[in-house]
Image (cartoon, rainbow, N blue to C red; front, side, top):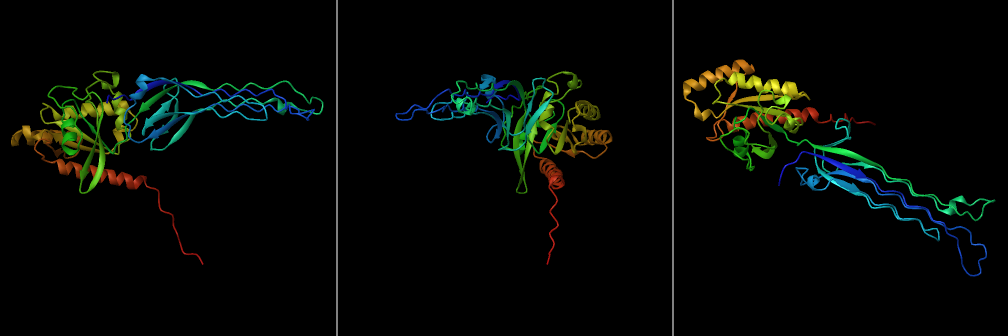
Length: 344
């Protein structure tokens, strides 16, 4: 399945049904009077977060969604049925923006959340509503009100606990493949990863979701390389694992480059808890390893982890560091328990 994280969609709710002009005509009833029913309400357009989706690819092939018109009113005071609704099913983590792609309409972060994007038009009144003492046989009815139409943008931001960031070929996809059942593309050339990947990592009988995004390069926030459009997928993470390749001539420069891009992107990424690791450590001898660890420590302001997803060195240490940060964040986000005291 292809990955699509943004789509432009046109939606329109249903028109209301028209009211009916009708009179009661039965044998032995000389003055039956008006009995035209009201029109039914037009269908609504909803958006709902559902389980089992992680892409907006369905909206590449269909971009127009229209709810049904309400059924017109009928005689014998019969009200028309409501028009059928339309529901846009999206993955959890989808944001809905207005046509300007800046005004946020709703943010669906949990499975089962729903939001009405467009309300159907009200049905028109039948002629029974217009009967008065001076006009006992009205021959008019209201048409239904028109529905709403608008163009919206769907923007997906994957929901994960931990995010992998770094320059291209920093070993992010290799790490994800080593700690989860995900099978990202791995090769020895830049930008092997062209779209985000998700994997479920397990450590000490605990699980968390890891997101791998394409590598960043200097100037990514200005559109250089793939750009920073995929950084939105790590906005919701609780911790970042910053991988710096041991094959970099200057690990300190590589670290600062990515940090500068995170700061330029904004949205709180630069303030997230960060675990720094020197990846691909198996490619270095002892002396070179020591020098690069020291250089990276000075740049990051903390001792980096040594990591090799190929040999397994430091993988469990990195996972335990990630789960510790994630659980701390979960506890901080959990609502405080109410103070229940015994009352006589």
